[in-house]
Length: 586
Image 1 (cartoon, rainbow, N blue to C red):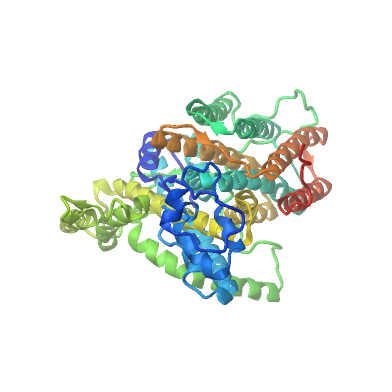
Image 2 (image 1 turned 90 degrees about the horizontal axis):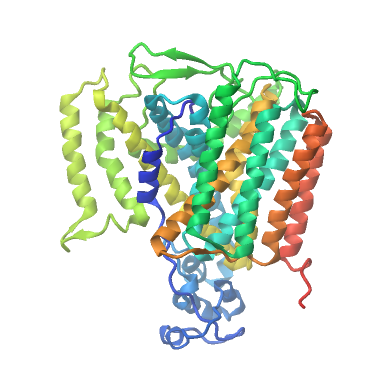
């Protein structure tokens, strides 16, 4: 990822409206009894559609083995309109029942690889193009940092939320993931930073970010209590994020970065510089702006981090282990990177030629639009036949080939054309749809695993989805802290999750409302979602009180307390999920 972003709101709006996942909220299977010994047929479902209670798809595991496949195929609650693979049919119809553990294992491996795809696409293709767009628009680093830089870093979380909110049956995944990631980042990641490198936090950014995040959590808690999100409520989420961005910008103007902290409510706070950076590998506080010799771009030069995380003089054995680890990871990433390299153009303002590769970029003019057509709404638009004769994907290929031919003969290998900046927009859209496609598969796999293990969507969201989307950021922040930038890493814990919850919930619900012309119904999974929301709120309140009391000096004791809080929360959440902790019925 690079360190420059710019505020291209109309592009985001156009792109997000065009590419939003459409997992249609179809009719759901009716409930006809808690115990069934005969398979369901289509006529059975049709005859009982007037019943008000519905059969949950996870009831399939309570049926006889011979009846499960028919149940999966005929129960509307088991259908998934989005995505490319039907995971439930693969488990219950594609393999013999005695191979269920093998199917689950394969799905778990595929899930981990999808998280790898999300990370690679966001880091090496989505964010660099976003950075180039921001550079072209000449936005300040602060505006870019809290808008597009944050959006690029939180792309997996945001897209997962958008996918999950597109279907009421998986909305619990989004809530669980957003709340779960919030608890994870503000306790495990923040606590780990304090343990690795005790430091003094920047007072104003910390107080600003934690207050805004608490307001966002309160809005979500209220929406859960009301059981719905209206149009006004969804716009309120997005409006709050716009207000947060404006607050960051205004504070940056009023308080110059080089100015010392003015003594105020917390006189124990030492003078310090406030970093608006939201991720360690973007732009560091000491970055300086230099102009490229071509005059096309201005880039941010940032100091390079040491090659190896951890001690500056690691032992030979540790170095060898890290080499083996990175080589194995590189082998796993190689197919993904090769596929993305062929389908996603990348504009790099740090290079004199802007990363212009004439043959490859001409190939992108053919393949990238084809990817857009075949990934938008899981390919539904791409296979649509114009006049019942000619598919859309064929038209896209013909037009793309013509553009590629003109570009190839009108340009040279050594000098990028004047319209080269348009490839940044093409790469931005293509990589975003790749992320969306992977996020859709992640949500579908998690829902399938929830059916197999009879787990609620909320617990899947707060564990697997939250861990998968946050693990990369956690390692990045830990590495940055070990290398002497704990304050920046700590600021990243709050800056990114503010965007995730406000844009994830607000935009996800807004798109669903615009499509269905009805408010979004939230169906919390019993007591667990309240435990999750309460734990997040409690952790934020504790940090808001304890950090100023410590004069913003965060030490190892504070870090271990946060880790203990997360472990306690996780134990309570799992005990609640499995019914050990429950509310007595009145």
